[in-house]
Amino acid sequence: MIKTKQDRILKELDELFPDAKCELEHGNELELLIAVMLSAQTTDASVNKLTSKLFQKYTSVEDYANASIEQLENDLRSIGLYRNKAKNVKAMCQKLIDDFNGVVPNDHEALQLLPGVGRKTANVVMSEAFGYPAIAVDTHVERIAKRLGFAKKDDSVLTVEKKLMKTIPKQRWIKTHHQLIFFGRYHCKSLNPQCQNCHLIDICKEEKRKKYLKKKS
Ligand code: SF4
Image (cartoon, rainbow, N blue to C red; front, side, top):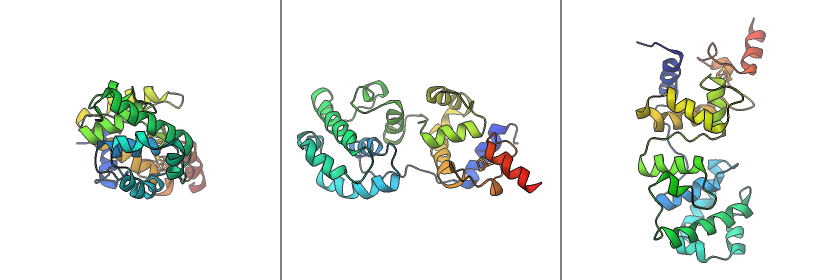
């Protein structure tokens, strides 16, 4: 039986996106980590287009660490912030060689010691590569959590993550994380949410929903 708003939201997410999953293409933990690092302020589609060639050219941590920064920049040029990303990917791979035997660590704290790897990236790698329950709060997850009342408008990203973890059953964290991203990417978009087709309109706290309801009445 459906009891709470949260139950309704989770049920709706299950109905809309039963097969939501990570859309960054990767074949191993290193490729996943690099794809997530490259995805900052860039679409997954752009990253996939780039990595389809990048992952053929660079197949080991040594390949990235030994590449010149100019070469890496050139190979990442098609995505935003490529200079910074090239610097971080090279330094991250060097750190993996120096401190982790060239292996992506299965450890949340250790991941965050790597250059360019913050809490969100560590959460994605821990959940996607190692199956550890985590909710990575990206721009979609933050927006949806606030629109649907899991968190308040002024909450920090970390507070949003904590509130989601408190409300959503742990066994659902990985799945719900992907579903929230899909909901934000394909249904409740930042600028043009599909309020007219939304079954959660009565729960939603977003101003745009109010405008739609006003127009309708
Ligand atoms: Fe998003 Fe509109 Fe649905 Fe609110 S009513 S969750 S803004 S699509």
